[in-house]
Length: 57
Image 1: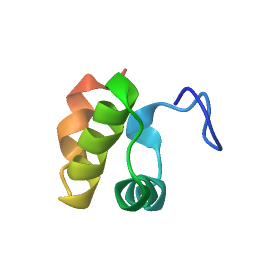
Image 2: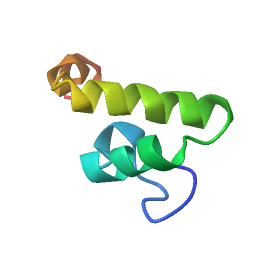
Image 3: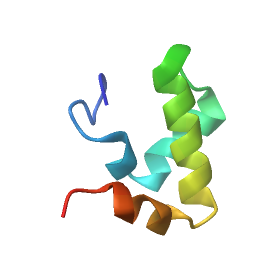
Image 4: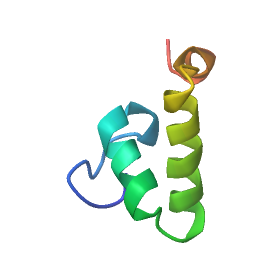
């Protein structure tokens, strides 16, 4: 995450309530916003296990 309370954290590791806050208030413009929106969908639909193969061992 490039800014805010969770600056420096991997977007996939952001808490669901933070992603939901963005969904309510609006995602930022650009790629960061698109990634946050995608992560919100993944989290909201309980699909976080899809990210396991992408994480380091």
